[in-house]
Length: 299
Image (cartoon, rainbow, N blue to C red; front, side):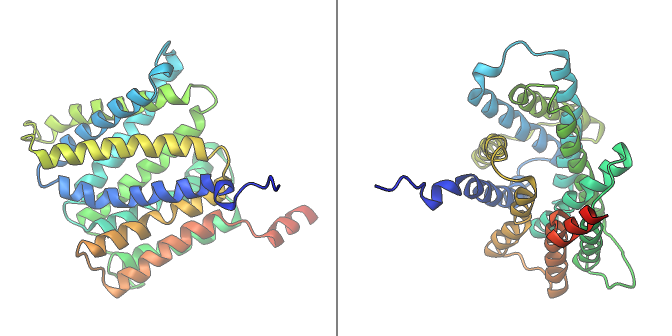
């Protein structure tokens, strides 16, 4: 009798990450639909309030004895989450969900660059190749040729969001060994919601939306999706190599584009080439060829 583990079970963490990447990709067009019923900043605040409740219900046994480090980490990460998702959501008012997803994916090659600037962690050679390829993709994706780069408001503010998401990942990595991740996950979502509700009146969003059933369904769905995504990532990435996980996550804008196309969105051929370059840039930035490792050892 064979005791070998079935292939699908040995690949379960990778399959789980692919599944949540599909959910992640679908969230862009879901948010765009939700904006029919709410202003953008309040929508994000409500979205993360729902996510906070969902994660809290799934993590009740961990929600005790919050430390000062937990609170500091939750507030810092929550602040960049609020900036990242608020700007992304504002951008979705004027650009397609597919384009937003491709632009947001630029956070992957940006992380090692910011790590270098903040902590002097020198990026790998392949990171520079990936960033260069992603930049070419950005030029094409925004409808420009290589001779010029002109960004509209939606594209600019979405790029600001991708920078904020890059800092979210950096801060999570920085605090990971100092805090309880389950407690901080609840805190960061709660703080993100709180900051959005604080910012909204300053930007003229003073009235809560009318809670129609489609809006409630979207908020509950996004809240549950955020909870599932976070919990699955925390579980699966204990067993999946970070580089492999990053390559799986690179599929997020592809899923967003496919779902957007089913919903009727159409990107120009030039924009599709740009999106492909962004995805390839993400993959290349995390690729570590063996011959480069050998060269490094021989040096």
